[in-house]
Length: 232
Image (cartoon, rainbow, N blue to C red; front, side, top):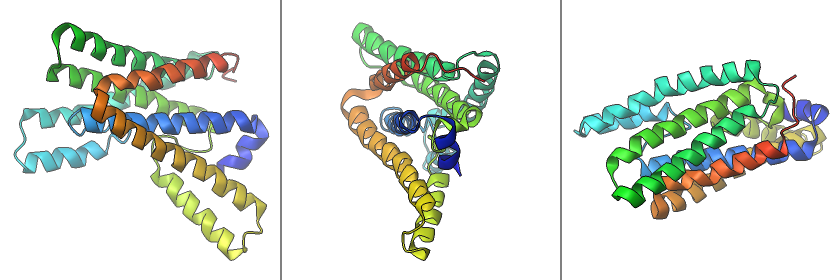
């Protein structure tokens, strides 16, 4: 399981911080693009297949087909992330590039809205940029699994593990310290993602897609705090 491996490899405090930050960012970005970019998922890209099918059945316009672009863009992003990870001397280099993309994307929306006013044509290129950024975060999670308590962008596996740990705790009457630790770490991922979703819903509703710059800046700070982490 993730927590015991992490605890023996890296400082627990840093793993807790990184896990919480990345889950909040994933929940935030996924919800912001859903709210402010025509129901488009940026982290759970397979969810776009469902939205696409629904919109087609309901007679939506050609823009519904744009959602299918998220899948190849996500795949390319993961491939690029793998390449960056193979050559980078700092394991947090992927998060640096993710932060750059989100920050530039958010600032681009602000600038273009200021210069030309709100326009739908801005939404989709920036939303695809967020999809690419989430692909990099997924690559980070696969390449450096011991840096977090588990997947930070898709919660189904974390919910499953939390349910298994909780079942074991009931069976042992909460006496197994390993299961207690595992369950607590799963709560970090789930609560972080949920908090990100709420923040993303409010931000996307009131301030639009430009708010993706906020998690972008947070990732840049995260990279600076971990700039000495080697990929080895």
